Length: 256
Figure 1 (tube, one colour):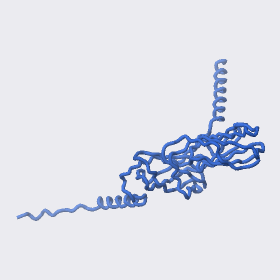
Figure 2: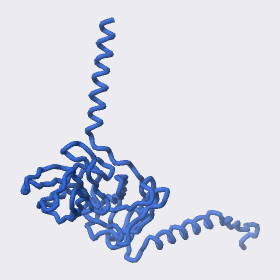
Figure 3: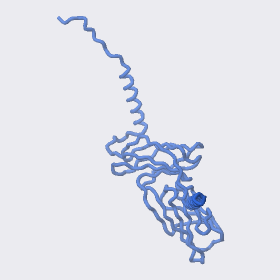
Figure 4: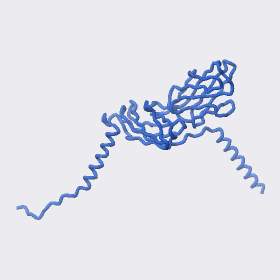
């Protein structure tokens, strides 16, 4: 009986510890899915990116290449009163769950506090653990609020985050549909031949990536549309060839 009670107590302690860990861990970014057409392309040419499983009617940022650690200091900002105070980091799109903003108002008898990304586009204030800020993974825009009026107090804002080597988001932007889908055309960055990740991220932290082979030997001018057209023609020609009945030679006439 005592052995059973000890087991139940151990399970209860383990459960409490697990739930406490969940409470302090950043939320993992949700997973979308993307496809690339074609999956191999030359630098300077275009690739079509299609995505599903992203947030409804939101914006998507597209990064190209490896993850890079970024940081900014003494960022420009705007805002009054208790906020929100807003600014923007230098590089984007950024990886969800890795942004941290530091607010330093100690020059005016204020405090140094941090706003830590929880993975869904919001940040948690170190002062009391509440959600008091935002980060847009697509545009790099951040905001933060406070509980006291800090108008006129000089603030130094700095941030750390993870971004991607190149931002290949089309200038017109990439909006998602009401069902969370999108299609966009990106231009392959001028890089050495190799395999690179194409990463799509929306403002709520949904993320997906696919590998793209960059090959400078792919003929210039072979756009996505042309490649799809050539593939279609090849399929039709192949189908007609295999459907074509074989010729039967008449061997009844003897050669003299």
